[in-house]
Length: 269
View 1 (tube, rainbow, N blue to C red):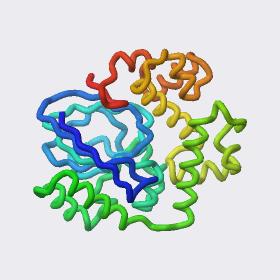
View 2 (cartoon, rainbow, N blue to C red; view 1 turned 120 degrees about the vertical axis):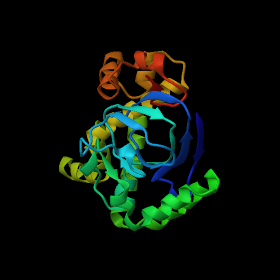
View 3 (cartoon, one colour; view 1 turned 45 degrees about the vertical axis):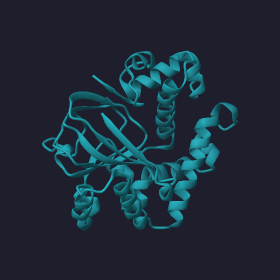
């Protein structure tokens, strides 16, 4: 499998990376929730999606040139055949900032790229199918998305919430706040509205999902015991770690560690 990545510094706080993946082999992969969203462009032939919660059960997002994969809370299984895609990995708040869509509208779903990119999708398709290098294409996509950002008070609020939430999750064992709402100083009603729009789920659910994602990366980066990894990821004890991990991965941390690949949250099945 060929993989290339580019970090778009102009989109810091909204976009994590732009990537390209290509393989000529046929394989099945399981994709765990990542806490991120992906705007995905098909360059090669079609791939079959075996399982996903879809808006239209007769529709397959991988049949489209482009689709925006929503914030997933359950694993996806992909059957990949002659795979060639370019993708933009985004933080949850990027969807409303770039496309004006409240994220809760397609949690665990996807949106056809024609709906969000509209008249520019043909130009994007021409660029991505041109003979430019990956870096040239990635920089063009970075400029395209940068031009779509609308500077609003709500956007700055959302970015502040994102930063504060990440700090809370990272340091929750060493701070006296019991919840994200306590840390941010918002009521539960205010937090629910803001997080539902910008993060797609409640503050508490986002905290749980972020803990899971952090644990997945810890399993790749450290040789510590599962108990220690769970504690470092903010879980109370091993049973809490196993129970919460299984909720998002449909398997225990130990089972994941035995099957994990070089890509965090993705492995062949």
